[in-house]
Amino acid sequence: MTILTAQTETEIAACFSAFHELRPHLEKSQFVERVQRQMNNHGYVLVYIRAENQVVAAAGYRVAEFLAWGKTFYVDDLITISSARKCGHGGKLLDWLIEKANELSCNQFHLDSSVQRHDAHRLYLNRKLQISSHHFSKELV
Image (cartoon, rainbow, N blue to C red):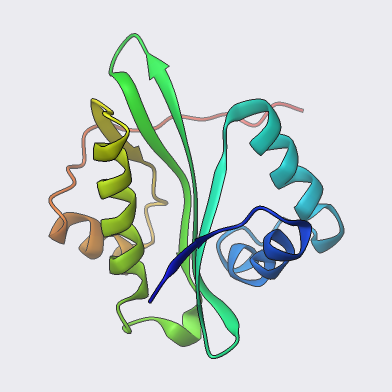
């Protein structure tokens, strides 16, 4: 399992199906543009694993500095497609992300996960991630 970085429009577009499982509100026609905008403006990096000629797992991350945490590796998105779960792709990708955070000399590693994603929570807890806070949000119209 090789972890690849999406850089071209074709590589980014190939990740859409996986991202759509995690973020069903995303529209295919706008996906590449949205990802590229985050890459250009916010340092977002999209990585993925291919198997059987499809993207089976993907993650998006960025490095930012916060007063609360210092230099922080933040995982925006982490998904394994439903048909490829229990094959180790998510764990491999998570291990790679943690290793990358260490390589970049980050002080902390953060990700948010929806409360109903129990399988993902088991993976995170098995990798010694801690539930450290409640995340509050409000949609602004």
